[in-house]
Length: 186
Image (cartoon, rainbow, N blue to C red; front, side, top):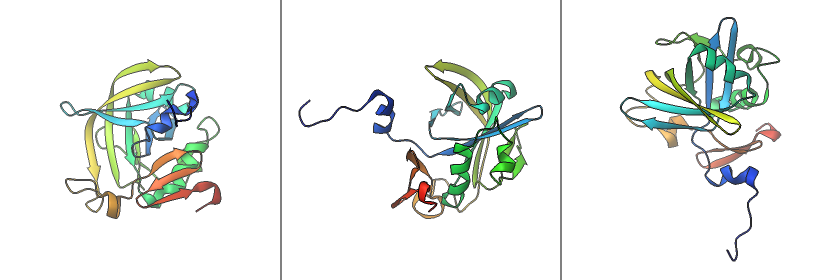
């Protein structure tokens, strides 16, 4: 197509952008995990289902598979430094709750921890998995959802309190009205 350049296969997903970057947490036995995930989406209203896409080599992949439950924690701009660390440090190396300075709080409806610093949480029971190339789609039925009133009041308050994070690739995150380069620590 004239005037358009070729996008390499390993970058085509960036043409679509991402939904809000979230922290997905789970635990099985003594293993806890928390992972920054940009590939997530709602899949059904009735029943309420959401999908998170997680690489099969990720530590969290096996923890979620064994736990059969996970929590999608929705961070705001204030949690960006925590999200960056959670997305770059491996759970194979250390407990990321401790390593990222995150506070684990018990789920209300599932037996896995949520991230206390996040203003919203979707507690999910795993209902299905689907292998997609190098990732697995984890389909969770939302069995509990909780949010602070300043973050959500019948609608997500994106431009004000919510300030959801959107990963643009590498160290770049988009917040409402600005792009932040985390390689510069700002």
